[in-house]
Image (cartoon, rainbow, N blue to C red; front, side):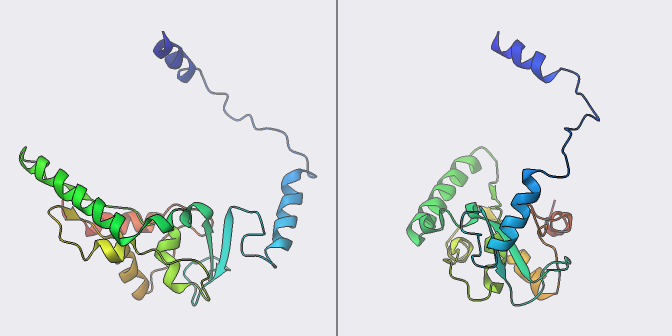
Length: 186
């Protein structure tokens, strides 16, 4: 019964072209000005979930391309990326790879680096911890195929590629998707 209720809900015709009416004076305009002011004193406007840091060079085509906007979630959990925890992950992946290989399946592991991790080496006077996940994992012995996107992105930086991620978003740019697909051996 619950499934049929969900099906009915998801099969309802959408009301396209109907947008909420928002007046010129609204809380969004106020918040924009308020945060713009607070970012002058704090890289996260004291209580915003978006951080803004200067970088050593422009990495985006945006007019403020030397600024990095990243989400608080990129920082939360960095302390859990200890060498011991990364080694446990690697051991688990090796064990899983062994089980899968007995069935003729090859394990491919492609962890996606977050925006902070990709640009952390370019942040000026970075007060936040460095993500060591890729540095530690790439040195460990593996019985699975490790696809190192951080290394791919680092090489792109060196060759001058901008906009690996969208300037004002946490998702990588279409250029990165294209670059990843081209680097894969299908």
